[in-house]
Length: 186
Image (cartoon, rainbow, N blue to C red):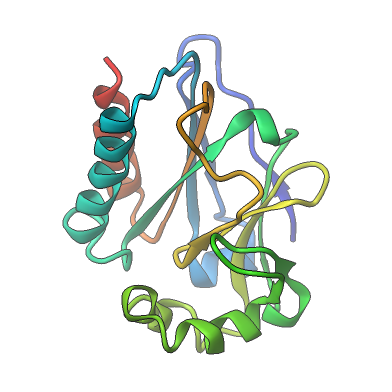
């Protein structure tokens, strides 16, 4: 089942929350996705590196090495909403991950089995019959959480508008990640 992410309420423009309580496929692998948009961001090299470092620290601590939650950031200006969060067979997901060429998701698992950094996260989804995936309205893959971002929407120094997604098995952890990421830009 495919579900669209809801638009934020006027009271709380920062958060978009979708609970996959009636979506059996996403519920069995990663039932929650929380999203936010940060607009008008100005990165210099130090701030950009600090932002990425913050995500890494959150992944290692609050997110318990991505097993409870995974944070992914995107250049919003390269994407077209609305966004959908789905769980599909790995053979049905094709995309270009960061710093790589086009892969099917099942091939990507094999590819990352030799990557020292990403290999340690593969166990989270590799034996599942479905993998979580986030798409924009043009069916561009944003990410294959909790493993890797898509190259299409990678953030960089010129990025001005950031779309943040956090998929999770624990909703509280996902919300906590957003509080830390949001405070970074206050």
